[in-house]
Every structure is written in C-alpha cells, then in structure tokens.
Length: 166
Image 1: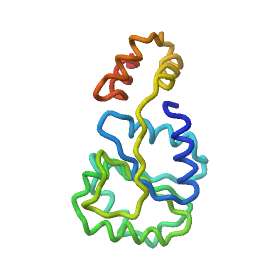
Image 2: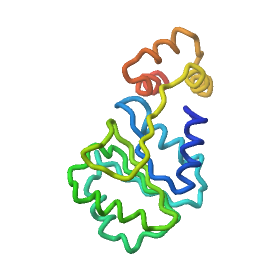
Image 3: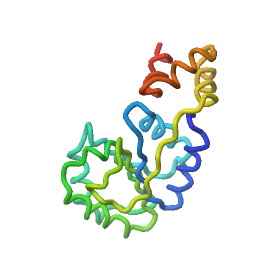
C-alpha cells in the first residue's frame, strides 16, 4: 500500500456514500491509488471501473441503463478530464438518487468545465517513508539517494514503478 493513511480515509469516505474527484497530475499515482483502494473496500462491494482513456464508449452505455443500477456500488471513472460529452454530466448527477452508490472520478485537473457535484480531493505528494516502505516491501534497498531520486522526479509514481520493474 503506497499511501496507506490517505487510501484508508478515501475508502471510508466512499463507503459513506461520498462523491469524490481525485485530482493529481500524470505520474503522481492515481492509478496506483485505485489499485490500493480495492484492498480497503469490502470484497462484497461491486466496483465498476471505466477508464475514459481506454473505453470512453462504456460510460454512455452504463448511463443508458441507469434503472438497472442499484446500490451499494462504487462507480469509478478514471481520466474523467478526458470526458468529451457534457450531456453525460446530467445523467451522472441522476445517479445521486441511487441509495448506496458512491462515485470516484480521477482527473489530472479540476474539471470546472463539467460541473459535477463532487468533493475535490488532491492526491497528496509521496512521502519519503511511504517510498521507503514500498521499496522495502519489494526487497529493494531504500537508501536515501534512491528515495531522493524518486521524490525529485516529475512523475514520482512512474519513477517508483520503473525502479521496481523486474
């Protein structure tokens, strides 16, 4: 778990029904946070993930079947900043009426051009201890020079993944 405290807090908010826009620049760890988040959520909670970068066509299909959506459920829309159809925002807002449905969108920027009723939450920067713990879990010597290299990288999570790759 890369950001254990943050991820735990995020999971608790989502379990309480929150609608959140998780914001961070590319390479900061949005995708990794989603992977870690799954470990904090009950296995019984259905999670639907749509990555707009890879499968933008799935969102309108899902929204056209709103009547079949029931809670509890977590809907995750990754790369929300790539949304091209503003008409989908109204349909997304309609999902708020579904008891037990939580929404997590991830974006590289705040999406003011598509006003969705979400709490904006900035992904915090990686901390030295988090990096050291992750390297140690992978059996990599977490010396201060390596940690500093990751901290100073433009895309620290991408740098960390590159270092940990076999």
